[in-house]
Length: 133
Image 1: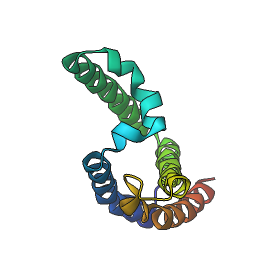
Image 2 (image 1 turned 180 degrees about the vertical axis):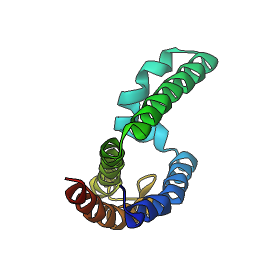
Image 3 (image 1 turned 60 degrees about the horizontal axis):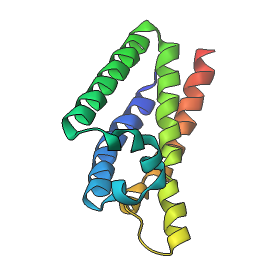
Image 4 (image 1 turned 45 degrees about the vertical axis):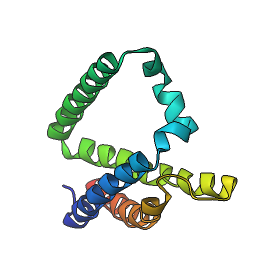
């Protein structure tokens, strides 16, 4: 069973992820980030409707797979939350890019909350894993 504290930390991060995505969108993150360009360059050769359709399908397939794992058992729920925890860590790349360029990097303002949320999240997630064993 997942603790209420872990759920609460995750729920708090949802509006943060939304704000972060909006900040990245508004500041043109997609135009300059090499990681984004690497993962999504395949879609550059497609028409907008084709790329949109394929991305929608991929997101639907991933959502269905994740839902299947979530309803399977509590252990999968913890592993999936571990993936979310990795995203909290990955968001540190905004700071590294800002240091590298010596200026604001798109998404950096909202990314400042991820280390705090991530620390609290991982601390509670580890407790949940230990409790389940």
